[in-house]
Length: 123
Image (cartoon, rainbow, N blue to C red; front, top):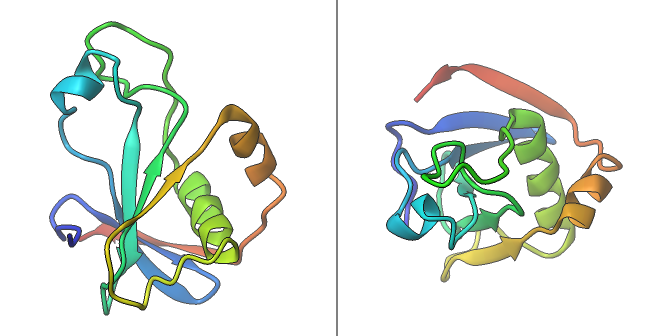
């Protein structure tokens, strides 16, 4: 499973460039509040293993008006740093890796300070 370039964004964490993307439209289960918001991350230049991150809130375009939040590049960078620390190997092939975050996990991400730079263009 590769992340399409269209609609994705680039982010550099600790000198490595990653591509990340939030699905353009909610899936049916995301729209009705059964499934939470997710985003995917992979290496930009040599994509191999994809990280699929599940967040403890719903999409802003959820049909039921559930609690939501904005996914900002700083959050993506902190999640990438945490996943790498936990053993995610983005350069190795294999099935995707899933990371389900709780509210407590999000609070703990503030302690992770990756070296971060943003690509100002969309791919």
